[in-house]
Length: 433
Ligand code: DLL
Image (cartoon, rainbow, N blue to C red):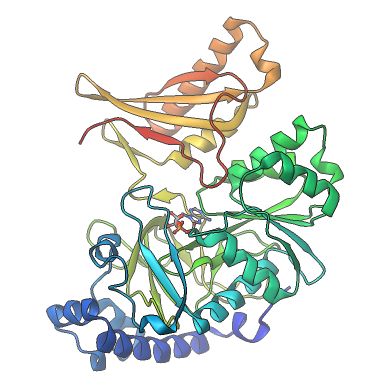
């Protein structure tokens, strides 16, 4: 179902007309209210009046995560604190957390975009949404929550953790839509199985999973194990939270970006040059409706490409490909660039292994080493050692053949790799740079 038929199906020219108008307003506003932007624009020699078309956006400087850190906690806010009604922060796993704020109108806009997203993922007023994204500073829990209420669905605000209890609630309350990270979805499946509950007997129809990269193969695994249709939802705190883009249930072919609120660009991460549609690079967002925390050309570090062709579902907003990884998560192993998601795809093709893995990177005698730890299923684990070694060799061979890197593969016992309640931590890089 299309939640906002008027805005989600606008012809391209109309989308662009809205974008230009809102972009001009935003640029004027941030120039007047955020000293950081005024200084950057002055240094680049651009005045708000110079921004007359979407192409002119390119004249503006980028904003990076470091800029937000330098202005920690509230330096990038464009409104006085009295009008800020909510504060969130990004997880901060890769350094100091960044703080973001919302006015009452921002929260309304976010709820609208999340209602659109949930509807695109298959939710309706009649659904019961089991929301296992974490509630708190992380935007996942509350973002989905407000969207679910706006849509008129019933939301179970279960948050992450306490997995055994979650499984009981799933059985007793009959939820029909599951929202959580893809790694936590798999964990819920395992814990349900341990408790003797078959996901196939639950009422779930669809799952709306995101907040971390997951491959097509992982989607297949989740759909098989959890007996539901899985769609991908994307977002980041700095730009909004969840709801920046979403796959539609009909096509599952790229994530529709809410283009009436965000302008997306793809750039070459090295040169900053804007790349044409279809080319892969770093995703950059400019928010054009946010009041408290507008961002101008924010570099997400996420790697993807854009497609502006209308979708079979009727939505006209540009689609971004499933994110293949972050430019700062890209592993460079002896000079070869590899994304963890590519390794995931290779692993998921091997039927004996489970979707739980860890990548350990180290440097021994000045040479990078990659060790892939992956769990085997119960059945394979009881096989002879020789058979296990054969599986290890097969995985190493496939990684070498498809990705060009040499990896040491170590099969791990079932359930031996730590499970996550939110974003999975799959990379351990011990190299000192
Ligand atoms: O993860 C917001 C969110 C919550 C999205 C719930 C979807 C569902 P942050 O904690 O700020 O915000 O992390 C943002 O997570 O730049 C990506 O690198 C990654 N990410 C988010 N969604 C996806 C996805 C939330 N669907 C960072 N695929 C982003 C791949 C994703 N990566």
